[in-house]
Image (cartoon, rainbow, N blue to C red):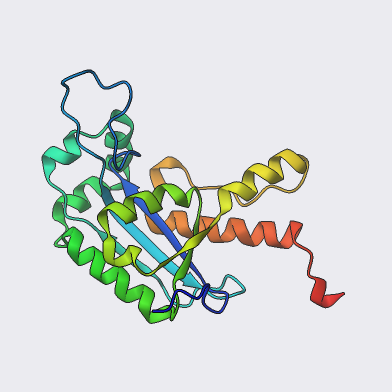
Length: 202
């Protein structure tokens, strides 16, 4: 796979669900001598889209087999959130190790991209931190550039506060990796429709 650049305008949409938001370092509030366990990926989903943000297939969803003690050590928000969505039980029941998930994700990317894939999503830099730590095979297929829809969300809110809003996001009880990806794709379509000028048609 060459490091030349984006592949034919395609984007690789990625979203992860984790045990928390800290892949490497203990939080500053951690007391001296307290045990620290870096957060982990629980679920990852991805969809490849073409230049018009049309999905190339149904995408890939993978859930990482996770021990009960890891899930029990999550913060209160994650325990409630992942319990409500069914992710906690799915992690306990999953047959897939982290290595299995890494290999499947890499295979998905290489099927759709013949150059490093530009990833896209909301606050996708957070997902990328976990991917670099936990999924080295997948990480090796990714471009250094990203498309973060959250940046557009912030700029549009600041510059065009009265502009039409993007489609309403799902409630917390519906948040899972694949549904979040589909929401992000629709959000970028909204910004493209309302804020990007099609110079080719002028």
